[in-house]
Image 1 (cartoon, rainbow, N blue to C red):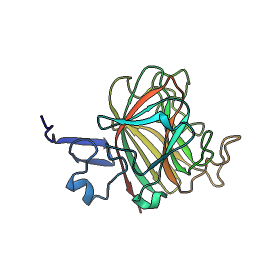
Image 2: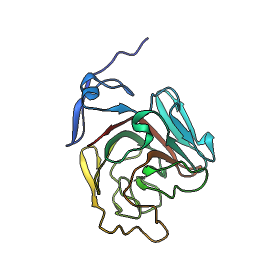
Image 3: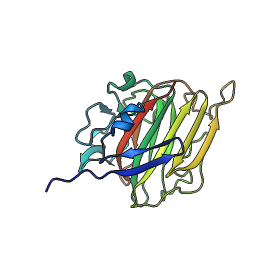
Image 4: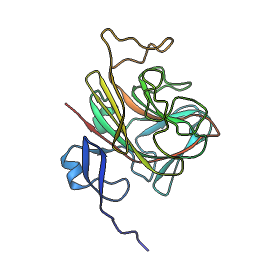
Amino acid sequence: MKRTLALSLLCVSALHCAVAADHNTLTAAEKSAGWNLLFDGKSLNGWKASENKDAFSVKDGELVVFGKRSHLFYTGPVGGANFKNFELTLDIKTFPNANSGVYFHTEYQETGWPAKGFEVQVNNTHKDVKKGAGLYAVKDNAVAPAKDGEWYTMVVRVEGKRVQTFVNGKQIIDFTEPTPAAPPPKMDGRKIGSGTIAIQGHDPESRVLYRNIKLRVLP
């Protein structure tokens, strides 16, 4: 039986509150507000995986991240896959001991951890003490913002040199890059700039699901 559209109130942060339709779709209000879908829920069109490409698949409208280290870079048409000021929202479900991340201001890299850009951590129960929605190695978060096995919404907002993250409407990180920038040791690429979005497959023991990946460009 065909699933009917169920409208619900989506308030992913104090900055984004709109009526949302079924998964991986945009309402008229969201379109009017400048939101774009980065993930269609059916395929990996508009995305390019690095090294271990089997780490990413699509099932039941969800992006499944499960396998050896790999990164899935957005290469689609929205914004020419090059974002500076933006607001990004993602629905995420982690499983026990899972680790993942969402990169921004990054660029495609065939192997290794992306050298350019910032990583917003995705981790509720992995052994890494840096927990979800923290700005990895730049401004970390020590408290898990959500529970394994439950969907939650993470928002990343970048405006100028300011980066904010939210989980289910609660602000987790508010970071403003100093002038001059002071990236962590051996992470010279962690500077505000511009670039694409990437989803991290961390290790073969980590299973994470994503859906409703939406972005709007800010002035």
